[in-house]
Length: 606
Image (cartoon, rainbow, N blue to C red; front, side, top):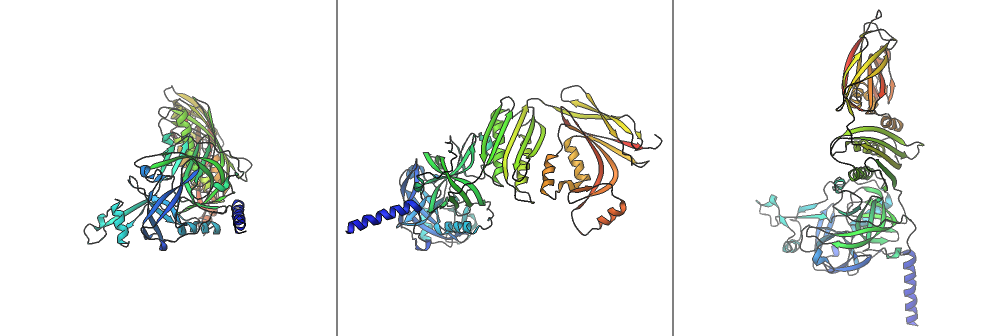
């Protein structure tokens, strides 16, 4: 009878575990932990199989950082004697007497022993509280190194660290009688960013955000958001992937699950980037092999199945939800040049990461298909789909470049960055499509000279301007431009004619109408990008001696002096001066460079 009850109890426990998927563990606080205590950790060394390794507590560093302790342990077992701490182990749960004490999270490079810092579980649980309360983001620190004097620490802990060579002399205490003139530099275990499809040069821009970047052929995620049947195997010690790009270009940050309670998970024991509130795809992962290195060994892994999303990226941990999914931004980059190539991929929707990842993708596609040095002309057409707008934000321009910088990329990234971070409203980007047309020719034409049909003009009269261009390595050519003198110009006044390129036109506009560069609404911001000057235009400006003003982004030219005086005394902001001008744009086959000026004089008798 007793055996029957025992079997019945076990069956009920298994059913409850299968139906609710609860993997929460009893925890142990740092006040209960003493040097010499032994336990075990859990992580994946190969495939998806969770394995155990042994740990011995070296000590607890009290109030180490932000009122948080740090547990120091020595790890043994499995491949650790050969590899030392492995990038991708971040988050591996550590247990003593069956109680969860925290996650492997910090360590030293070039250490012969697998000595690690363990983030206490209490600090990690705070991240779940933040997530549940939906607090505002905490600003990320620039330096994630945990470094402080050990004067206030237990001498036995210091002695143990010295025996393993984990301390170095503190120059500040060389001339003092301090009993512990040492420093301990603990850094988060490097987060391996496993990528495929990227050129090495394009990865340099993202390397400051991630500790270690490894190129590896990723298995594509199925894209099916149905919860997999084996989800109960996703438990503390399992590998977890945070996908930031997927498709023809892929990138995933790899770590380990520390804690799971129902659909809530904690991982890493340190931040990915420390974005605060975030929304990143979370996937299961498979470890293919461990790349052993004296500097820093790495788990070579790839994402398998998307099962949820990461909602918090904080100092002590990342937190996520199983069964909730994030919508990524579909992107397409089409390169028309020596090779016609199209890349389709998705990137995360994030104010910081999205522009950076798109920039990486654009650079990578150009590096993969086109030359980096030498004359080239680039035409860009960018369409950004924005939620709530029927038409995409559409930007077109042409550029010339002779170096490896790919300067036009800035003109793709700037509008994406500004739209995501604008002050007018929360913007959701729904799609990004970029068409790049590249030719290996220098199409620059310099404005050499301008000539007018007459210098003395009458109000309302039409004047012919001959613009003389000198295309690169070619003979001169002339472009005729007709302009009309305004009917209301005063006799005896002077009219300045400026013929210039897009850059000079923008500089002149900043001086004559500064209010144009301070939009007061989201639509004005969009128009600022869509109506930008094109580099293939000859721009003719007729500067008039008339004053107006710009108020809240709207132009009011040619105002009476009495009204201008009243507005100049206004007790509110948003009013900027405006000098009246007439602008004419003439499209050409060249990329225009230069500026020329000539004055006309108004004479009724002319």
